Image (tube, each protein chain N blue to C red):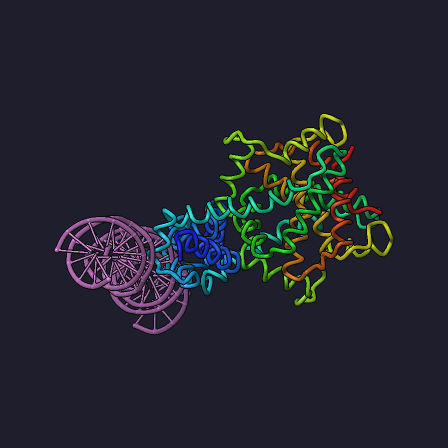
Length: 191
Length: 191
DNA sequence: GATAACGGAATGAACGTTCATTCTATTTAA
DNA sequence: TTAAATAGAATGAACGTTCATTCCGTTATC
């Protein structure tokens, strides 16, 4: 087994356990056990627990980002691009409950606050795909001229909560209902 | 100091520390210290940590519930009642950041899942004010005939996220913006 | 055989909870 | 009225457990 395999195993085990049992319910020893490695081995690949959790977040975020960016109809109207992103977002997280749970846990933890702060201040200065769509929509006067944080909330909050409810069994978010919630969010954003 | 005082002191200290530092960042010893009591004293008033956390939730939930129910225009149209509730909700949690943070932490913890499950199944069988408003709205064909969980999400998710952002400094949720977000949520619900 | 990777026992810090003891206020006895 | 007795509230040191991290003997790789 080469180096990369162990690292991948550790990340997979960590995602499963942290998603299922929460950030405080998955000790390093258990992660090691599920990954089939010794507890000490984890520290050869990740400096400490925080680094593991943060790198795993980046990795999982990358996955949904790739889905959203792929086949993006960049030359179509804002509304259509919005629907494409949101439906891709829902489909991906319906298919990947563990990824969803992980991201949710991360955002609702102190890591998430830190992360959100850096993103809004754009510390890294990198290009944010969705942020850009909303700014363009505001410029074109297609969506309301609201603070960007508010735009994100109107666009994502009901959808994310609905995905959560789908996974906990409180809601059956089938294609029809997904369409309804995306349309509702769009209606709350559009001028 | 009489019995009631100590209990209140403990609850106040617990709310402050659990809200500020999260459910895993506030040891019982620290709560006791801030409350000005011995660590063991807490266990005279609360069976264990879980009971303290759960009772505190009920107490804090009661407070916002009282605000929402008070002066409720029960004989006015659904839309007006919705606006009354949502604006009261926002105003209360803008005024009480610690209560907001506490409720948020609770909902995003295993306690919250349990609580949500019981509420949706209506285990206690008690009358739920807001639930009832939505059901009535559906019956009157004023709001969309969607699963009740979806109605809650469309109604509350953007508002709750906006209150969070207000307290973290990402958003200035003044009266004007509060009006906008409530109207947006209503627009996503109404037929 | 030298070097890097690995495993898992050992370590020590942190935490919830317990319990023997102290303190305080109220009742009883003289 | 005063002093002893009692009840039970309050205390905080101690306990047992859990957990992230380290350490070091063993194994694999070249």
